[in-house]
Length: 397
Length: 89
Image 1 (cartoon, chains in turn blue, orange):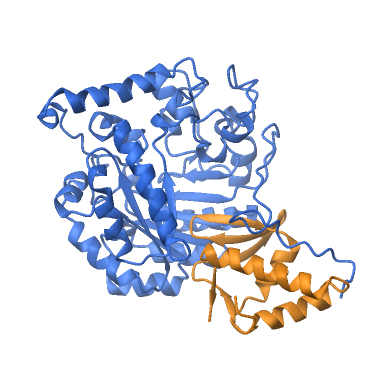
Image 2 (image 1 turned 45 degrees about the horizontal axis):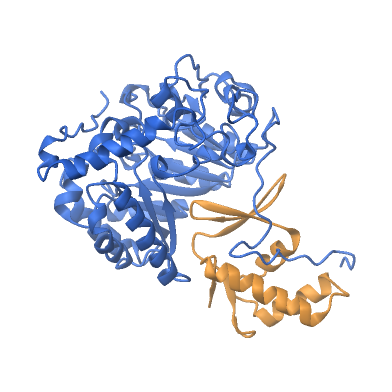
């Protein structure tokens, strides 16, 4: 018994038990241990979603890490203090060793999260995942309506997903439904919210498309209108209120319409590391688009060394790389200058302030794009016919 | 939360400790916990009642006003319940 132990349960701030998480000081050259590892097990996928966050340059199957190499990744990340392991792809279920990898991560002490379309799941694999210790299952939907969903996915898989969602609402895992929203489906958001609610998941994620990779290619058809965004905020806020204590509702705004940029990845090299199918280690999903970046590989270098000192992780870590208006901005410790990949995609300069920021000298690149979206909308009743065709994601060799 | 109810960490929620502190892990999010929060959560096992948790904490935090302690535990659990990290069994 320690009678000098101070009694300090969390500060009673709204909805935030415990001390809020404070990331490592942004100026620190050696950050704390990462909080999460994103394991892109494969880039292969049965779906062809037009907003896939995978890079345009997909890793071929022949480059994929084998079972032993992935198990080594989880052993090393757990040893570093990593807490969450996110299993994603492509479609992680295409790896026949998924269950074995989940078990390895779980046994190493990691919290295991599977991000999937459920295509490739069956009763046997569901049981195996449960026995392997899977903690959380995230199923994504393209729409509430089969027609719209299948048009986005490029394959008719909607009905199959619906039947898995019904199964998973009663366990055996914590269950999230992720709903990706964009111009093509936001006009029936109310219907989509009722649809996800009907499965009673613990958590719902309403995520606007992010414009990298395939989403950037299809920006002209995916970008919502201002009116849609305003209506979305209204509906989602009401939904969050109604679901309080029943379903956790997380909402990702489209940052083209935000005033300030998102704190991408919680800061470059501050909280997360991503291992791609070939074992290359990246600070974020899209980092390979930035020219001149070299990525260390887990086959050759220990993960701790990659995290602490590799060129790719050091490049935009902290604040030294920043120029104005970020450098003297008081928000720099919150948003870390926004997203490096978006800055590069829009301005050609990865070190620029994210143009999603209203303080960026390049902000017009974002507002003009939003304005074009408005013009397409009012321009013609047949605007869809004039929009470019979908650029569907392909499969790697 | 009723003093006789048995709080328990919800499915998909876990308490983990690493070098820089204690974390409550939840689906795709986490909360850093201080020592006291951790002492409460460790006892949210579905076996302890709220009343029993408070009684045990009184031995850990001797000298803290019992009523204050009980109110703090209540509000802590209520907030985690609203976040769906705690269920009552």
